[in-house]
Every structure is written in C-alpha cells, then in structure tokens.
Image (cartoon, rainbow, N blue to C red; front, side):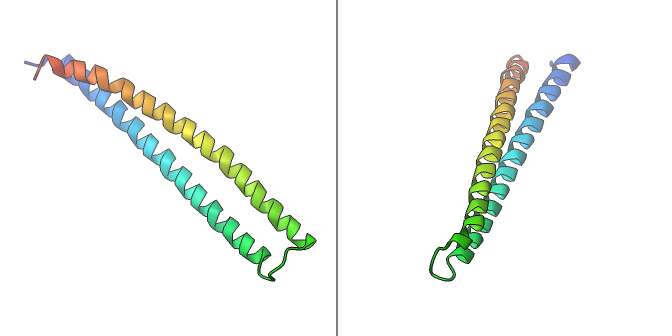
Length: 106
C-alpha cells in the first residue's frame, strides 16, 4: 500500500515535470511565432525593394533592415533553443525519480 509520502513525492515530481514541459512548449511556440513574423516582414521588405524591378542605392536601408532582422532572429532563436533544452533536461530529470516512486506500487 502506497504511503502518503510516496504519493506526495510522486505528485511533486509530476507537477515539476508538467511545468517544465509546459515551459518547453511555450518557448518553442514563441520561437516559431517570432521566426514567422520576421520571415513575413523580411519578405515584404524584399518585395518592396524589388517592386521597381531593379536594385539601387536607395534599396540599401531596407536591405540593412532585412540583415538586422536576420541577426536578431538568429540570436533570439538561439536563446529560445537554449531555454527549450534547459526545460527539457529538467523535465527528464523528474521522470526517473517519479518512476522510482511507482516501482514498489505496480
């Protein structure tokens, strides 16, 4: 018969696993939304630049904007990836202790 301590410990591990899984999904959703937005804006800027069927020196500022979006997007995506990996490792760390709580009660 499971004792109250095992049940409480199992519930705590489950809550921590669940919370870290939710945070992982949140960071992935955020990364995808920002990447999609920057890709869309960059596409619109490139369409604007090439609307006259030629590239001129006047197209340099919008081109630099596209480069800045790309640089910011790369840094943001790398940071989000780092956060995703952190929460994934944490979530995995709660699985084994949770399984040990179940071992004697299956």
